[in-house]
Image (cartoon, rainbow, N blue to C red; front, side, top):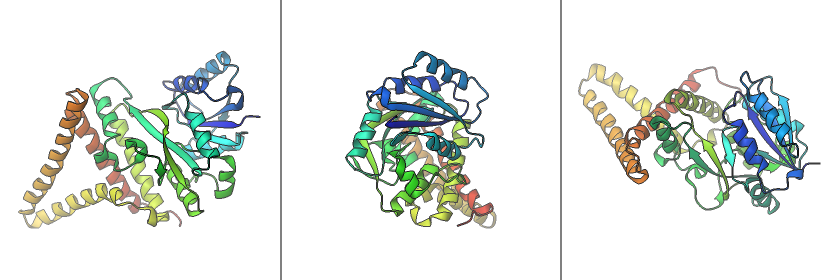
Length: 331
């Protein structure tokens, strides 16, 4: 029987799934006590073929594929957990590469009862080699873009609101309930809310490390953060006490610009205020880009970072507001 079940929801991940499985194979944790359960949303590319290739060439690692017919992340996670046979569950993403001691560090933290759900640091790498992708990766780990998220910025071990992926005892899911399949995104944060409400603790440990590949284009970045913002709004309707001040900044900024624009239709002087606000915003982003470009010795980050951050702010903020205009979810 496996001690640790690594669960991976995926859909059309042919470019990265082999990298993930190779990293799992090279874990320092005893391979005979591991199993990998991949919940595939009926991929239409060569994802399944690549998984089977790895399974054939790495026969000393248990790899199983289960069908996720609903094709959503929370449904995929629930199906994988149901199929998992291990005492410990370690969730990973098909866009990630865990450090060799990732599983060992997760299990150690759980055995030492540091918390109920464990996670660590994302080392965010570009999803492609061009300058836009490098700018997106830099933005995804910049405090102007992501606030005080420990798993993106690093820091000392501590209790936090949420962690990436998550590692926990399987009985935790039986105790607090499965992932909420009505939330297409933010399902991990919502689970962590319920864990905390049940008296549990979410623990950030910088010794738990993984590489995460960011989106390679601005279009895909916009789509990602639109989804994040929309479903964060839906979750906030259900758990208003979980709202953080930093999460209000993008939608408040957009609302402020819209309000000033309406006032400017009757009072033209407000156009100057709009111009001033946008100028201050651009100066902050340009300064951040210049500093990052200097520190990384990559001149194109001076443009790529401000572009990526602005896309993240406006897509997330607009989607957050839009989620409150759509049909409300049940409480």
